[in-house]
Image (cartoon, rainbow, N blue to C red):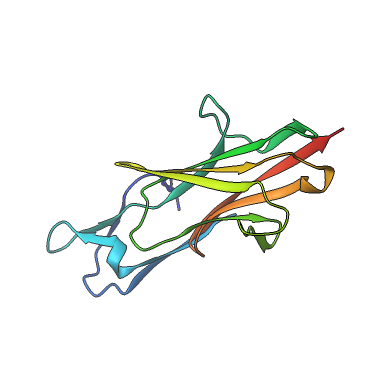
Length: 150
């Protein structure tokens, strides 16, 4: 695909059931409910984008914390589809906010252009290090590597 995934994708088919986009490192499937009819011959859809960002909204792939501090990971989603859940995972494990570990919370703010989901983990420990994934259901995701140092 020669166009950026951030751009609007135009389709000729009115019989669209879903839109399946595959690039070198990303696969997205959008249900028909996310495709908007703009005319009799053109349909448009907005492809969700997920970024994990720093305090200045710059995309990041690694973040370092001192043991005992609070982890704060910000996930920005644009073109948020209806009926999708934002999930945080550590590796392949979905984070459970009611675990015995405690101190895990998420604050999600819905905006006109999408959403911001912030994961907080209090009293960081060495075993809190590793990959963290912000996902939009099974639609798309982004990963950051967290390093907790003593």
